[in-house]
Image 1 (cartoon, one colour):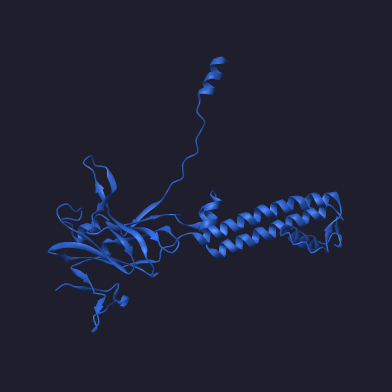
Image 2 (cartoon, helix red, strand yellow):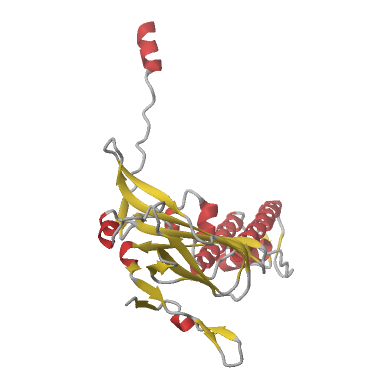
Length: 305
Protein backbone atom coordinates (compact mmCIF):
# COMPACT_ATOMS: atom_id res chain seq x y z
CA UNK A 1 0.00 0.00 0.00
CA UNK A 2 2.81 2.39 0.79
CA UNK A 3 4.50 1.61 -2.52
CA UNK A 4 1.28 2.31 -4.43
CA UNK A 5 0.78 5.61 -2.62
CA UNK A 6 4.34 6.71 -3.36
CA UNK A 7 3.85 5.92 -7.04
CA UNK A 8 0.68 7.97 -7.12
CA UNK A 9 2.38 10.91 -5.45
CA UNK A 10 5.31 10.74 -7.87
CA UNK A 11 3.04 11.04 -10.86
CA UNK A 12 3.17 14.54 -12.31
CA UNK A 13 -0.13 16.32 -12.90
CA UNK A 14 -1.15 16.45 -16.50
CA UNK A 15 -0.48 19.83 -18.07
CA UNK A 16 -2.79 21.47 -20.52
CA UNK A 17 -1.38 21.60 -24.03
CA UNK A 18 -0.24 25.05 -25.05
CA UNK A 19 -2.30 26.70 -27.78
CA UNK A 20 -0.87 26.65 -31.27
CA UNK A 21 0.08 29.96 -32.84
CA UNK A 22 -0.39 30.08 -36.59
CA UNK A 23 2.25 32.22 -38.33
CA UNK A 24 2.16 33.11 -41.98
CA UNK A 25 4.83 35.06 -43.84
CA UNK A 26 3.42 36.94 -46.79
CA UNK A 27 5.54 39.45 -48.70
CA UNK A 28 8.08 39.26 -45.89
CA UNK A 29 5.52 40.33 -43.27
CA UNK A 30 4.51 38.25 -40.27
CA UNK A 31 0.81 37.47 -40.08
CA UNK A 32 -0.16 35.90 -36.74
CA UNK A 33 -3.73 34.68 -36.55
CA UNK A 34 -5.72 36.57 -33.93
CA UNK A 35 -3.01 39.13 -33.24
CA UNK A 36 -4.22 42.70 -32.56
CA UNK A 37 -7.85 41.54 -32.60
CA UNK A 38 -9.65 43.22 -29.71
CA UNK A 39 -12.12 40.43 -29.11
CA UNK A 40 -9.30 37.90 -28.46
CA UNK A 41 -8.17 39.57 -25.22
CA UNK A 42 -10.97 38.58 -22.85
CA UNK A 43 -8.40 37.14 -20.43
CA UNK A 44 -6.88 40.61 -20.11
CA UNK A 45 -9.91 42.91 -19.61
CA UNK A 46 -7.85 46.07 -18.97
CA UNK A 47 -5.97 45.64 -22.26
CA UNK A 48 -9.26 44.84 -23.97
CA UNK A 49 -10.90 48.05 -22.75
CA UNK A 50 -7.91 50.07 -23.98
CA UNK A 51 -7.73 48.47 -27.43
CA UNK A 52 -11.39 47.92 -28.25
CA UNK A 53 -12.71 50.44 -30.84
CA UNK A 54 -14.58 53.45 -29.45
CA UNK A 55 -18.03 52.24 -30.63
CA UNK A 56 -17.42 48.91 -28.90
CA UNK A 57 -16.11 50.64 -25.77
CA UNK A 58 -19.19 52.88 -25.51
CA UNK A 59 -21.52 49.96 -26.26
CA UNK A 60 -19.85 47.90 -23.54
CA UNK A 61 -20.25 50.72 -21.01
CA UNK A 62 -23.92 51.16 -21.95
CA UNK A 63 -24.55 47.41 -21.68
CA UNK A 64 -22.82 47.22 -18.28
CA UNK A 65 -24.77 50.25 -17.04
CA UNK A 66 -28.16 48.89 -18.09
CA UNK A 67 -27.38 45.39 -16.81
CA UNK A 68 -26.22 46.68 -13.41
CA UNK A 69 -29.34 48.80 -12.93
CA UNK A 70 -31.55 45.91 -14.04
CA UNK A 71 -29.97 43.58 -11.48
CA UNK A 72 -30.40 46.11 -8.70
CA UNK A 73 -33.99 46.70 -9.81
CA UNK A 74 -34.66 42.97 -9.40
CA UNK A 75 -33.04 43.14 -5.97
CA UNK A 76 -35.40 45.96 -4.98
CA UNK A 77 -38.41 44.03 -6.31
CA UNK A 78 -37.33 41.04 -4.24
CA UNK A 79 -37.81 43.16 -1.09
CA UNK A 80 -41.47 43.81 -1.82
CA UNK A 81 -42.89 47.29 -1.26
CA UNK A 82 -39.60 48.81 -0.06
CA UNK A 83 -39.43 52.02 -2.17
CA UNK A 84 -41.64 54.95 -1.26
CA UNK A 85 -43.76 56.47 -4.07
CA UNK A 86 -42.93 53.53 -6.35
CA UNK A 87 -45.59 51.20 -7.67
CA UNK A 88 -45.19 47.80 -5.95
CA UNK A 89 -43.86 45.15 -8.31
CA UNK A 90 -43.36 47.66 -11.14
CA UNK A 91 -39.98 47.00 -12.76
CA UNK A 92 -39.49 50.41 -14.40
CA UNK A 93 -39.96 52.28 -11.13
CA UNK A 94 -37.36 50.07 -9.46
CA UNK A 95 -35.05 50.42 -12.46
CA UNK A 96 -35.15 54.23 -12.51
CA UNK A 97 -34.77 54.35 -8.74
CA UNK A 98 -31.60 52.28 -9.25
CA UNK A 99 -30.40 54.76 -11.90
CA UNK A 100 -30.85 57.64 -9.46
CA UNK A 101 -29.05 55.75 -6.69
CA UNK A 102 -26.12 54.57 -8.85
CA UNK A 103 -25.48 58.08 -10.14
CA UNK A 104 -26.14 59.76 -6.74
CA UNK A 105 -28.84 61.95 -8.30
CA UNK A 106 -31.39 61.83 -5.51
CA UNK A 107 -34.46 63.63 -6.85
CA UNK A 108 -36.31 62.81 -3.63
CA UNK A 109 -39.53 61.55 -5.23
CA UNK A 110 -38.62 57.92 -4.52
CA UNK A 111 -36.61 56.85 -1.48
CA UNK A 112 -36.00 53.63 0.49
CA UNK A 113 -38.39 52.98 3.35
CA UNK A 114 -37.20 49.66 4.73
CA UNK A 115 -33.95 48.37 6.19
CA UNK A 116 -33.63 45.95 3.26
CA UNK A 117 -33.91 48.78 0.73
CA UNK A 118 -31.37 50.89 2.62
CA UNK A 119 -28.93 47.95 2.58
CA UNK A 120 -29.27 47.57 -1.20
CA UNK A 121 -28.92 51.36 -1.63
CA UNK A 122 -25.69 51.29 0.41
CA UNK A 123 -24.21 48.53 -1.73
CA UNK A 124 -25.28 50.23 -4.95
CA UNK A 125 -23.90 53.61 -3.86
CA UNK A 126 -20.51 52.05 -3.18
CA UNK A 127 -20.53 50.30 -6.54
CA UNK A 128 -21.51 53.57 -8.22
CA UNK A 129 -18.52 55.41 -6.73
CA UNK A 130 -16.10 52.68 -7.80
CA UNK A 131 -17.69 52.27 -11.24
CA UNK A 132 -17.58 55.99 -12.05
CA UNK A 133 -13.93 56.16 -10.99
CA UNK A 134 -13.03 53.12 -13.14
CA UNK A 135 -14.89 54.37 -16.22
CA UNK A 136 -13.37 57.84 -15.87
CA UNK A 137 -9.88 56.36 -15.58
CA UNK A 138 -10.36 54.13 -18.62
CA UNK A 139 -11.72 56.99 -20.73
CA UNK A 140 -8.81 59.23 -19.69
CA UNK A 141 -6.30 56.47 -20.43
CA UNK A 142 -7.75 56.03 -23.93
CA UNK A 143 -7.67 59.78 -24.63
CA UNK A 144 -4.18 60.29 -23.20
CA UNK A 145 -2.46 57.57 -25.22
CA UNK A 146 0.12 59.24 -27.51
CA UNK A 147 -0.43 58.61 -31.20
CA UNK A 148 2.05 59.37 -33.95
CA UNK A 149 0.73 60.94 -37.14
CA UNK A 150 3.80 59.97 -39.10
CA UNK A 151 3.67 58.86 -42.72
CA UNK A 152 6.16 56.73 -44.60
CA UNK A 153 6.66 56.57 -48.33
CA UNK A 154 4.73 53.72 -49.91
CA UNK A 155 7.92 52.28 -51.38
CA UNK A 156 11.64 52.29 -50.70
CA UNK A 157 14.21 52.75 -53.44
CA UNK A 158 17.78 51.71 -54.10
CA UNK A 159 19.71 54.37 -55.99
CA UNK A 160 23.30 55.65 -56.13
CA UNK A 161 24.29 58.23 -53.50
CA UNK A 162 27.83 59.58 -53.66
CA UNK A 163 28.67 56.67 -55.93
CA UNK A 164 27.39 54.00 -53.49
CA UNK A 165 24.11 52.07 -53.94
CA UNK A 166 21.88 53.30 -51.14
CA UNK A 167 18.59 52.11 -49.72
CA UNK A 168 16.30 55.13 -49.17
CA UNK A 169 12.79 55.82 -47.93
CA UNK A 170 10.92 58.90 -46.76
CA UNK A 171 9.05 59.74 -43.59
CA UNK A 172 7.09 62.87 -42.73
CA UNK A 173 5.41 64.43 -39.69
CA UNK A 174 1.75 65.19 -40.47
CA UNK A 175 1.06 67.14 -37.28
CA UNK A 176 3.28 70.08 -38.21
CA UNK A 177 4.71 70.17 -34.71
CA UNK A 178 8.12 68.92 -33.62
CA UNK A 179 9.09 65.39 -32.63
CA UNK A 180 12.07 65.91 -30.37
CA UNK A 181 15.09 63.58 -30.28
CA UNK A 182 13.61 61.47 -33.07
CA UNK A 183 15.52 58.35 -34.04
CA UNK A 184 15.17 55.73 -36.73
CA UNK A 185 16.15 52.10 -36.55
CA UNK A 186 16.05 49.95 -39.65
CA UNK A 187 16.30 46.17 -39.87
CA UNK A 188 16.53 43.59 -42.61
CA UNK A 189 14.40 40.54 -41.79
CA UNK A 190 14.91 37.44 -43.94
CA UNK A 191 14.92 33.64 -43.91
CA UNK A 192 18.29 32.00 -43.34
CA UNK A 193 19.65 28.51 -42.77
CA UNK A 194 22.47 28.01 -40.27
CA UNK A 195 25.55 25.87 -40.94
CA UNK A 196 23.88 23.14 -38.86
CA UNK A 197 20.92 23.17 -41.22
CA UNK A 198 18.43 24.92 -38.93
CA UNK A 199 15.93 27.36 -40.39
CA UNK A 200 15.87 30.78 -38.74
CA UNK A 201 14.14 34.11 -39.30
CA UNK A 202 16.94 36.58 -38.64
CA UNK A 203 17.10 40.33 -38.08
CA UNK A 204 20.04 42.39 -39.30
CA UNK A 205 20.33 46.03 -38.25
CA UNK A 206 21.03 48.44 -41.09
CA UNK A 207 23.24 51.42 -40.32
CA UNK A 208 21.93 54.78 -41.53
CA UNK A 209 23.90 57.81 -42.63
CA UNK A 210 21.80 59.79 -40.12
CA UNK A 211 19.78 57.78 -37.62
CA UNK A 212 18.62 60.58 -35.32
CA UNK A 213 17.70 64.23 -35.38
CA UNK A 214 17.11 66.73 -32.56
CA UNK A 215 13.92 67.99 -34.20
CA UNK A 216 11.78 66.11 -36.74
CA UNK A 217 9.35 68.65 -38.19
CA UNK A 218 8.72 68.19 -41.92
CA UNK A 219 10.39 65.43 -43.92
CA UNK A 220 13.21 62.98 -43.39
CA UNK A 221 14.88 60.77 -46.00
CA UNK A 222 16.60 57.80 -44.39
CA UNK A 223 19.62 56.38 -46.26
CA UNK A 224 21.52 53.13 -45.78
CA UNK A 225 24.66 52.69 -47.92
CA UNK A 226 24.93 49.19 -49.37
CA UNK A 227 28.67 48.58 -49.02
CA UNK A 228 30.68 45.48 -48.11
CA UNK A 229 29.53 45.68 -44.48
CA UNK A 230 25.84 45.87 -45.34
CA UNK A 231 23.62 42.77 -45.05
CA UNK A 232 22.10 43.85 -48.38
CA UNK A 233 25.46 43.69 -50.16
CA UNK A 234 25.30 41.41 -53.19
CA UNK A 235 21.57 40.86 -52.99
CA UNK A 236 19.22 41.19 -55.94
CA UNK A 237 15.45 41.62 -56.25
CA UNK A 238 15.22 37.87 -56.89
CA UNK A 239 17.22 36.93 -53.79
CA UNK A 240 15.18 39.32 -51.64
CA UNK A 241 11.97 37.64 -52.79
CA UNK A 242 13.42 34.12 -52.42
CA UNK A 243 14.41 34.73 -48.78
CA UNK A 244 11.11 36.50 -48.00
CA UNK A 245 13.07 39.59 -47.01
CA UNK A 246 11.48 42.71 -45.57
CA UNK A 247 12.75 46.06 -44.35
CA UNK A 248 11.37 46.89 -40.90
CA UNK A 249 11.46 50.55 -39.80
CA UNK A 250 10.93 51.82 -36.26
CA UNK A 251 10.69 55.53 -35.44
CA UNK A 252 10.49 56.95 -31.93
CA UNK A 253 10.65 60.40 -30.41
CA UNK A 254 9.06 62.83 -27.96
CA UNK A 255 5.99 64.77 -29.00
CA UNK A 256 6.64 68.38 -27.97
CA UNK A 257 2.93 69.06 -27.44
CA UNK A 258 2.17 66.36 -24.87
CA UNK A 259 5.79 65.58 -23.89
CA UNK A 260 5.25 61.84 -24.33
CA UNK A 261 7.19 59.21 -26.23
CA UNK A 262 5.55 58.13 -29.45
CA UNK A 263 6.32 55.33 -31.87
CA UNK A 264 5.65 54.58 -35.52
CA UNK A 265 6.66 51.68 -37.70
CA UNK A 266 6.63 50.58 -41.30
CA UNK A 267 7.48 47.42 -43.21
CA UNK A 268 8.63 47.25 -46.82
CA UNK A 269 8.24 43.91 -48.59
CA UNK A 270 10.64 42.80 -51.29
CA UNK A 271 8.36 43.97 -54.11
CA UNK A 272 8.05 47.40 -52.44
CA UNK A 273 11.79 48.02 -52.78
CA UNK A 274 12.32 49.55 -56.21
CA UNK A 275 15.79 49.16 -57.70
CA UNK A 276 17.36 51.87 -59.87
CA UNK A 277 14.69 54.38 -58.92
CA UNK A 278 14.86 57.67 -57.07
CA UNK A 279 12.34 59.83 -55.24
CA UNK A 280 10.93 62.93 -56.88
CA UNK A 281 12.33 66.04 -55.23
CA UNK A 282 9.75 67.73 -53.01
CA UNK A 283 11.85 70.81 -52.14
CA UNK A 284 11.39 73.84 -54.39
CA UNK A 285 12.88 77.33 -54.49
CA UNK A 286 10.92 80.46 -55.21
CA UNK A 287 12.18 83.44 -57.16
CA UNK A 288 12.58 85.49 -53.97
CA UNK A 289 14.90 82.93 -52.40
CA UNK A 290 12.42 81.07 -50.20
CA UNK A 291 11.92 77.31 -50.12
CA UNK A 292 8.79 75.21 -49.79
CA UNK A 293 7.81 71.53 -49.73
CA UNK A 294 5.21 69.99 -52.02
CA UNK A 295 3.87 66.85 -50.35
CA UNK A 296 1.89 65.92 -53.44
CA UNK A 297 5.03 64.16 -54.71
CA UNK A 298 5.94 62.55 -51.38
CA UNK A 299 5.40 58.97 -52.64
CA UNK A 300 6.42 59.50 -56.28
CA UNK A 301 9.52 57.88 -57.78
CA UNK A 302 11.14 58.00 -61.21
CA UNK A 303 13.45 55.45 -62.84
CA UNK A 304 17.12 56.29 -63.22
CA UNK A 305 18.28 56.52 -66.81
